[in-house]
Image (tube, rainbow, N blue to C red; front, side, top):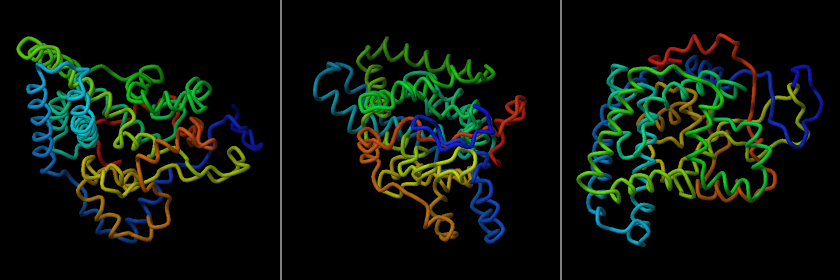
Length: 347
């Protein structure tokens, strides 16, 4: 596709734009008007203690279910109503740590992320950080934002059955897609993540049995499937009110980040404050509500979701919402990824 294209958007096309990431300009405007917002930045010491409690809870349940058949109602309901909430909490704790918001030193965040990874069952934390940093630095970029569906996904899954399949297995799409879109450097942290995770998995199987480890796997899968907390994956950047007759590159793009201010933020490190998070990714989860309170005129008129559960239903059955409902841009040059500092949480 050429950037000279200006015709009305085809029915099956992303919302291409030449506009830069809107979060950058809003952050500058907020800081200009409210410079004291900078005082909200920095790590949150409470994060490690909450995460320790959640990880301990998951290991305790895994031990208690060591003799329970995985396909029994007791096992499945426990995994859905407790395990999935806990696994989502672990996912999003790793998200906080990827912005170096759990500890002062980047290395300590990386190491604790490996600990928070343990109830997920597969090594994930070390790879998440660099991919997520690319998502923030190059939001919507055709190459470096691996949060955006590929054209193959969009073509195949932009129908009710396809979207239902995606919503059910979205955790697998988010885990596997980045490896097919762009590559990252394999570091000693990745190796340590793999070794620690598989060693703990091995000990669990040896002393508690396969059922305990399967509890971790089932909890993680459900956390990224048809579960209330999984709604945030779709809610954050898919466009639920697409404009009509959008003109590629010539039109101002629709709002590409949505927030959610409901009760599920209590289980998910306030990730629902997603517009605020993209505006200030170096403000920890505990301070995001205060950010919105201090600069209300910048957020009150932006689109929000009232329910993550309804987001999943609407995503699947709404004809106007497809896999194409994402803003895309080409803002990163061929050498841009090399400039990314994965220890930097100030961009």
